[in-house]
Amino acid sequence: MDYGMSAELEQFREEVRAFVAENAPPIAPKAGVRTPENREELELFKKWTGALFTAGYAGAGWPEEFGGKGIAHSLERDIVVDEEIARARAPQGTGAGSLVANALIDFGTAEQRATFLPPMRTGEVIWCQLFSEPSSGSDLASLRTRAVLQEDGSFRVNGQKVWTTNGHWADFGYLLARTDQDAPKHKGISAFIVDMTLPGVDVRPLREMTGTSDFNEVFLDDVVLSPDALIGNPGEGWKIANSSLAHERTGVATSAVTQRQNVDALIELARTTTRGGRPLIENARIVDELGRLDAAVESLSALVYANVSRWSHGHERVQDAPIAKLMFSELGVEIAEVALDILGESAVLAETDPDVVDHGRWQDEFLYARAYTIAGGSSEIMRNIIAERGLGLPR
Image 1: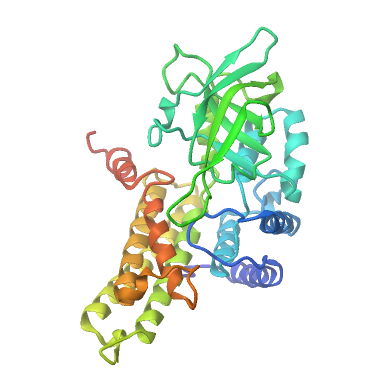
Image 2: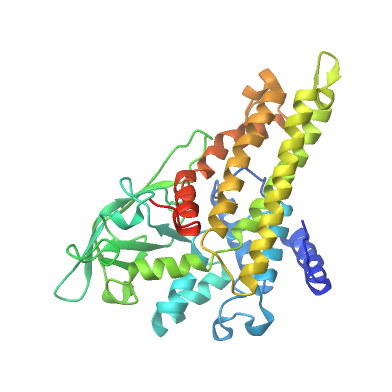
């Protein structure tokens, strides 16, 4: 995985690896982006988030005045931190805090920064992202949630959001809402901070086929936001959202680590699973599948490090992240399908079934893998971005 990492970065990697081993919370790993299952896990997540900030591994890219590392920070260091957290199968920092932090640092008022950034660093508060809507998933700019300016300068919000990770645990939400009905769809959107305890905020967990509720619907019924809840200026929401999302570039590195772990686990599964008295690692068809997946994950790893190298030198291309995201998500589905093929009839067993040691992990991976081909931009949208914006092909 470590394509071209300097000796200094490798020393930093060892430091991070030791920190993660000592401090990561004792929460069983699961496939995908998952939320705390109960209050006890929530407190562990918060403590872990605070520990990452205190150690300087989270928020390192923030300006020094807000607790960042300044010139000591680099994208490569962020990549190393996220890789080591993923390699240990420990939780990433929970909630949408890093996303809204970028928005506040770039566009927020001094009062907003002083109020909301410090508790992010201690892990005291959880944030959720209130972007997606039932009728505007891949076309976010078509969102319909409205924030109407009142005479006293407040905003009255009505609408519905969906796929809100951590919505049921969140103290605050990072909201996009339409404030100008007559402006072009990308121009009439504004960004807000929402106190999730306000009257009219109704969070309803969604039960998923994994058996958990990581996502939520959020209904906003005449929710009144004070003037100081607005981030930036009215109509800047699209720019603010894209700016804050542009900071989030290290996820592609964790994706390569995750899929490498999954392929390695799949190879071990083939070694320990027998059919007709012989281990499946001796089956020519299975070996072909494993070899193909192993080559694919190495390609993904090489792509990730090529991206990191370009980005570190200011040469980011519009197609870089979409290609990596597309490879990661489609590869995840293929790995899970081969795992279930190897397991045969025992693939029906879930993690919660009695006497299941590890097989249930693969059912969980299979059920969640398809979500990655949709979340964060569907595979179809990724292909369109690569073709149209990256290659200059016609719509």
